[in-house]
Image (tube, rainbow, N blue to C red; front, side, top):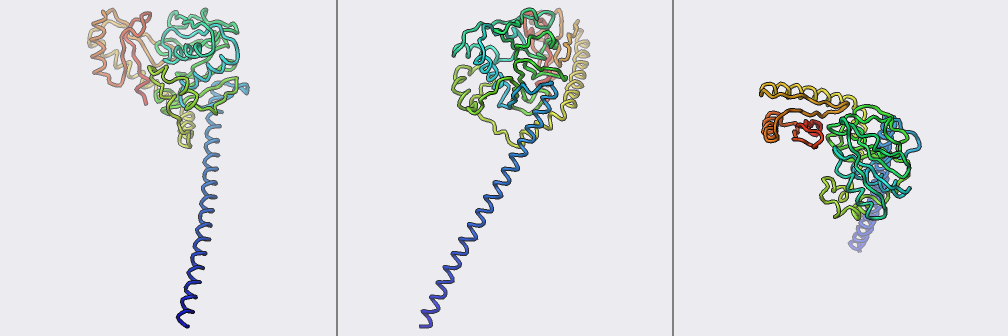
Length: 345
């Protein structure tokens, strides 16, 4: 009898222990859930804070007012594509005018691609005079759209006051504060060789609100693959970047150290050009250096034949491994191009 009573007491205590354990476990789960929710909320608040501060910085840097909507995307390619698609969807365009040289890979393929889908416009390539766009070829009529690189390589800084307002401004290579208000759209790249150095990502300021909910994963992938596989950055259609707190922290840090980074670019560029000039003198090469306003690129102008230039480039690359040299990048701008920015991380 006593034994049976003992067993019953132990059984009841075991049941009570199990119940207590379950209660404690549920309490811990609820507490962890609340803590995770709070942490995620704080993290999201920080993300929004750094994002808003970064956008405010860019708004002020380019003097953009409240007529614009601002977005951060996977890449500058994505920004260009969304800008083109939004503008072409909003008004009838008869002509798109793009640079004939020193332009980014995606301008022409994107224009051609969107033209095949649901538009009917002509793609024109405007020429350059004295290392500047031929401003007379840029059209101000409302049924035209111009794509302008603010600071293209191997060319002079574009004179903003001569650019029609019906333009997409690619400001990725900018070096100075500039007023870009009233243009149709402004795009930026955050690639590692750009003044804003994140390694990936892009920015768009546009007067029309965009539907980014579709995301590049479904929207761009469906349209871009496999039609532009030759593009260096076609990966934008295959991967969604997780814009977490570390991305926005880095972006905000880069923006607040922008002037310092640009000054480092300039110092690096000046020192390397001096070294290159000294090297050419030792090689007994007759040359002149063509510099471009607000640019970190240059041209070495010589009277050498093409094969002699090629041999010289081999020597230059061996001597200056951190610099890219190309021969006659464009037939209108004969010379050996000196490109530094891609090697300045």
